[in-house]
Image 1 (cartoon, rainbow, N blue to C red):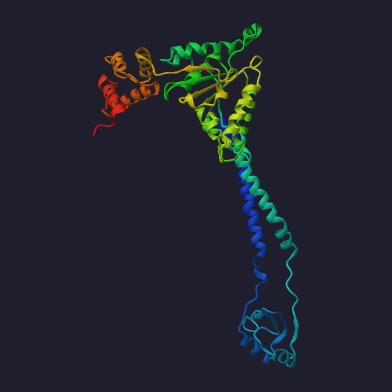
Image 2 (image 1 turned 180 degrees about the vertical axis):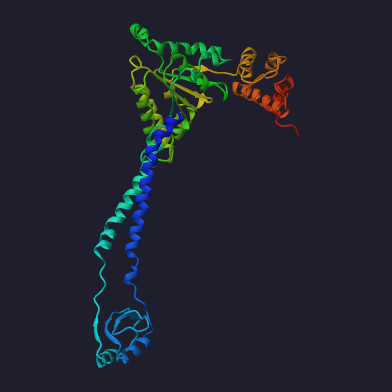
Length: 418
């Protein structure tokens, strides 16, 4: 796979290299058109030497301009160049002097640029400008950051496979929540069964619970059990500095989801966009962007047909009391599933799951650790096992012992020893 990815990037790298070479060549050609050519450069001499050569009748002809006097010698001696130049000064007697000594003189016409220089000055700058724009446009398109990228959804898409698939067996301590979500899994697998009876599955399910209890993992398990694509995005990623960007991202998210239906959309931290609108009613300077995003979300949840190709919206929050009432009405997030901290049995199961990922000593008593971790969420228990493994590694042990887990509990609860 890495080799294939490298081959896919090879044409893009070549295009960038060619663009850079063309830009550099264009700049060099443009600069060369303004630089004086060596053949056009004439040695300059003092004005006094020029007068002496005129008096000695060694000057054949002279061309006078505002910034220089260019003259030719009749017979250069001792390797003198035949063409010389000097800087003119205010000399009223110069025409008479040149005439007396038989010097042909005239005012030289202004120097005209060559056709090549004219073409370069007109063609090269626009070409360089276009190449630079194309170069940066290609880079933005290659990184997925186009000119209107702020209106595109930032949701990440997970398609379950054998390696990355998450199932209900990977989620422990939330048996009641898993039981309620089993209905969603069955509907995603067999939507026709419900459609024939006229039953309507909830379009949105709200997972309510403290942070770290496994709401995101539980939603991934629903997608894994149903074997459908899974879109995940945080509520704060909808809101943008540009007014209207959040609503556009909501539309783009649901358009992508409809193309991959049946699928699941998971919105983490729903309260970031779903807070009650009563707080800003009548107040100048209310959060219009957040309200537009919320209104668009409500519209999208009302707009798709769940019986044909279902798109189930799962959302998580730890502040359900702050959500707008329109979100919780029937037809939207009308079902709330509590994902609370695990009990003793749930903590023991979670510890065993994460304990299997590290090398535990056979003498470790997970029952005692589970009893000592009352109030711990699933994320806290995962951190506990990882902290114990770090302590064992620092002590140069090959397995994690009971003392490591006990010390890890103290670290998680009280911090480092002082």
